[in-house]
Length: 294
Image (cartoon, rainbow, N blue to C red; front, side, top):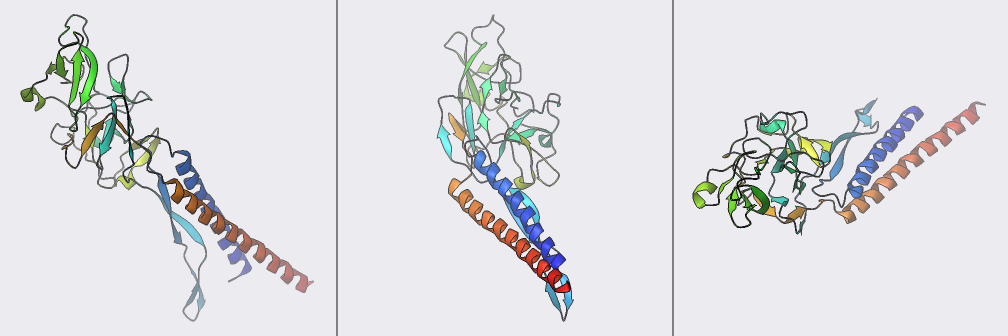
């Protein structure tokens, strides 16, 4: 291997291990972020140089991918009924700020595992950044309070079951109703009505590692993520309550394992130092050659 090749090999190691340290640092910094999914770096070697006799010498390392890891995070109990977690692999669906209602297709929605929701002043269920949570028709979950119908006007959410069924207490303080459709009056909480009302929507991605991060624990679908391009529907976007469950009064924590991340940090730091030593040694060899020429 030439001196120049050795230098480039060492430099590639410095650059890529530096990027890996950025990924590890981001994971550690988000260890307490609700619904955060950590990432890992995947490396591959670069095209090797043929030196004759069927021999090859590697020319360094490149970052193959930064892959999001969507393992289930631990859950933590909460006092808020609108704090939600998903037990399973699906995502909450939220309306992008530029989208119209209803959101046309499932892959047009923002996706998230962070379920710290609340009802805002417009009686719409939103996340802390104001993104509206969608129901199974692709519309924002919005309640109605006319001020003149105490048995149906929205008072407060009192329960959300594992299939996304939302029950609220009317302003009379007695009557319980189901959320029905966006911005409309609720219906009586009866078994017959439970089968027909809209619910909180979940969306699945067959390849979640292909989702792109949008910040704020939000993801957006890509062509390779396997998110359906069909419209929202009660049949397709309702949690089944078995393999996919909505857990109320619960928040999913970050899936970052601090111990594992610190081990990765030590290994990456040592790799960085080793590549730095490669460059230093190569430079010393170059100086020796120059001294011989003189």
